Image (cartoon, rainbow, N blue to C red):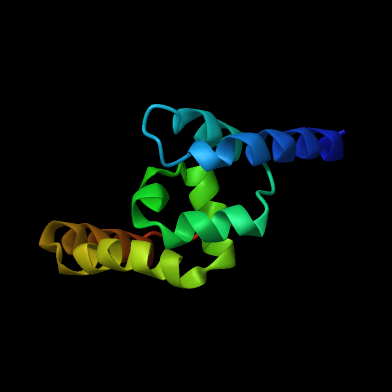
Length: 108
């Protein structure tokens, strides 16, 4: 069944992907991409290569792009980790959690 669904989505993607750069029509191929459990690599590569399209992708599509190109994932996550590391309030909260875990007896 999922093979039939993927096949239908592939056909729809073939017909609609050429219009993905048109803002008025972009929602159609993006919805198909979001619903597709295994987007063909050729589409993921084209999305990854075009920064504006990549930014417009739903997270479900970005996950597939990241599997294909882990560098894009690192580029996306790195600024968030940097922000976390320098945020004093977050650091203090993390220290409190660690301290609580050390002082709380473990239940078995």
